[in-house]
Length: 121
Image (cartoon, rainbow, N blue to C red; front, side):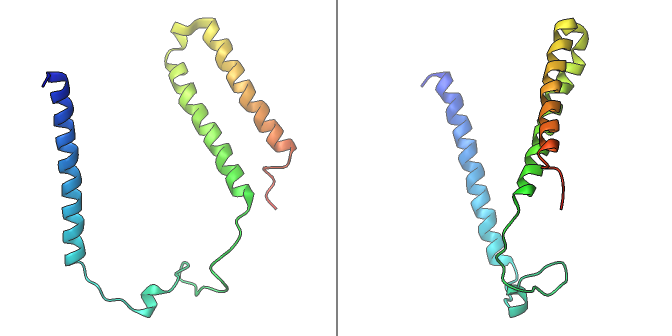
């Protein structure tokens, strides 16, 4: 066996050992944990208030839109921070590129505001 494949064998061995240890620890935890089921433990808990109505409810799409907008601007930070570190090395080209990138994101934000997506009613 070549040393190239021997390295993979070592990684596979440790991955298998890790999986085996996880299974052993979960088995030990299931044996040692206290198990005292009751009706109170099986009921739904909502911040100390007794639940009212059925457990099913429809979620507004706005939550997802806010989440996507957060994700977009969070990913923007991932691109802006490395640019800020290398701003001197990139020069004018880097400045124009990041300005275009931020302009596109701002246009998307303006579009979302004009469509009324950010209005919470």
